[in-house]
Length: 170
Image (tube, rainbow, N blue to C red; front, side):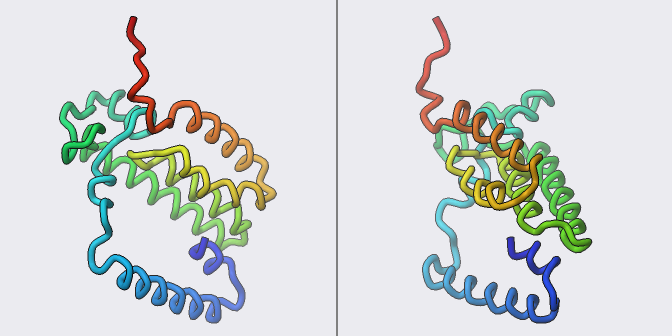
């Protein structure tokens, strides 16, 4: 959200100063709590869950991993799929940043950024919906609200953390 407030805010100098101060405070807080290493982020970034867009993309491209990452249940993310989804996310963020700079609603831009993040993450859990729900609720963007409702339905049905325990065989 900070990016879109910064890009759409007035006066820009005051908003930029507030953003830099907030970023410094958050980095200091992160360093105090976690030190120089965030726990588990590398493992999570390298795993892929069923029913995520990167998983479906890997299946379509024939790039599904056959081995498990770091002894986890979930398979590893293919580097080609990772690159494609990262580029898609960066493209979405650039478009949204440009729209915010040109005067678009920062709440809608933040909501669409959260949707893009959820769709491009390889390891997706249903509670990630909390990233987009406040922006969809506060924004006046009907397409964002409909997209969020569909995403809620899909993640709540297909994104269950225990879905791997369900047997689909006879």
